[in-house]
Image 1 (cartoon, rainbow over the protein chains, first blue to last red):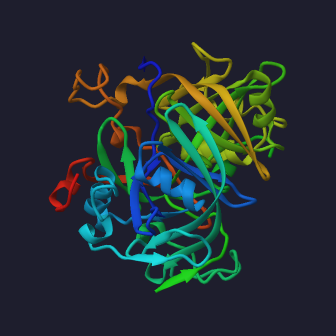
Image 2: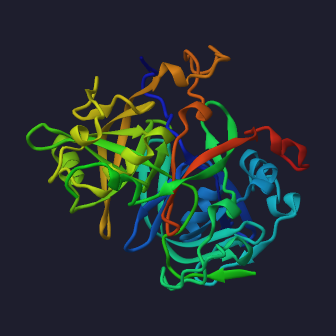
Length: 201
Length: 201
């Protein structure tokens, strides 16, 4: 039986990403978010939603840029800290010992120790109630060499390997339960396992 | 060492959701997506991105409504099928044996067998290159009783329990690897495990 909960923000799974920005003085800052997702393939874009009262909000508006950094399980504690503190009161890079790295294409820092970094140029701002949705065009995607898949299929994207999610070990946020969860095992090939079901395609 | 891949749409983790709509004739349809996320708390909103050439695109534009349905691992095969077929050519509910259920608040069907269902009223449409971002206000959230957490904390949201992600078993899509992955174990409490790091908050 289905239980109705009313108009609640509750849907699984949602990511844990760390948004990197520079503040008014050019000091690097980080903020942990779980409201975000990919929103376009051409141009490649990612969206993140923030409240206006965050330090990061003003930083994105000023610099028209942000980075999305994917923390690994090993940094769950630092990632949580980055989510419960404000860059107005503390230098989160100093407190966590994480390292800001200047981006190649945009005016926002990436986090060296996190295995995946996405450099985004702000292309659209959408106001939705208390949140602002920032749409960023992906200018570059970087991955730590050690998380790349060993069976390197050069035919795919012409890449030197693909980031292996089982090595990246990204984190999920579970709203209301108030927990972080890891990722699990491989459930099968996309665009393939469904072919055993009959029907036109 | 970080390897640069250029302007690629590649970030982990991203969800596997099934979007429910009615077509011009009122026939229920489903489409599997991985471009989406929560985008606002007040009002509660979720965003999904689709290409214009999908059957679902026209359905959302016509009915100003869609549902987000969270499939469980047990339905990975059906979910994949729903992603590689078009409602223009096939009745996906009939082919998969899944059951469309009329929503309480919006003109779009939910999927009975999937543990979480979100009813959304279209409130904003954002064009981004080849994709269209549909922002839906969540009018109701439903969960299958059997996935609710056993330690029911009535103080949280006044709910009759919270959906336990380890029972829901949502699916992740891994871009480029072309796989589906499950969710893993609990990594700790959010807004808590970071408190052991020193620094203002």
